[in-house]
Image 1 (tube, rainbow, N blue to C red):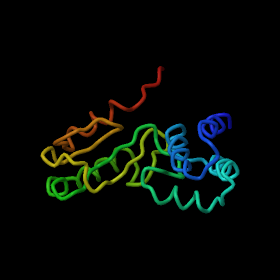
Image 2 (image 1 turned 180 degrees about the vertical axis):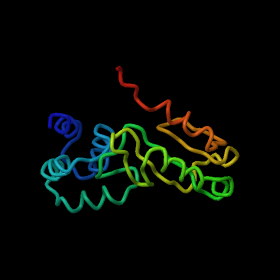
Image 3 (image 1 turned 60 degrees about the horizontal axis):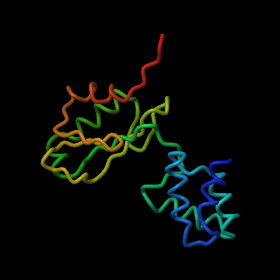
Image 4 (image 1 turned 90 degrees about the vertical axis):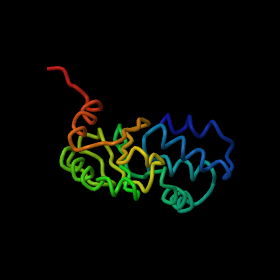
Length: 153
């Protein structure tokens, strides 16, 4: 893949840059493809297992394709008390996915997180980089609709 080679060419072939290269692959593809890890291992002359260990250690890195839009639903104490579990059920029902999964159309991935640092706005949900506070089941369909692609008829 040309994109992978472009990423590798940005860095000298030194293991200290392995995390940065994995992050660049994550950003480029929304996950780290196996072919990318194999190319990186060859480029650095290191075992694939060491890159795999790194890629599975960091939550920000994923070996599975993620959706175009990442939904982070807070289940910290304040959000939990104010109904995040109900919102999780609502997202499950509307998108037919569970936490850690990606929708069949590849549009959404759902992540349940411990805290988003916006407890005063609980319950909180983040889609990509946009925060939504005091989310209710009634608001949920409208929020998600903003991210659903409209296909011309």
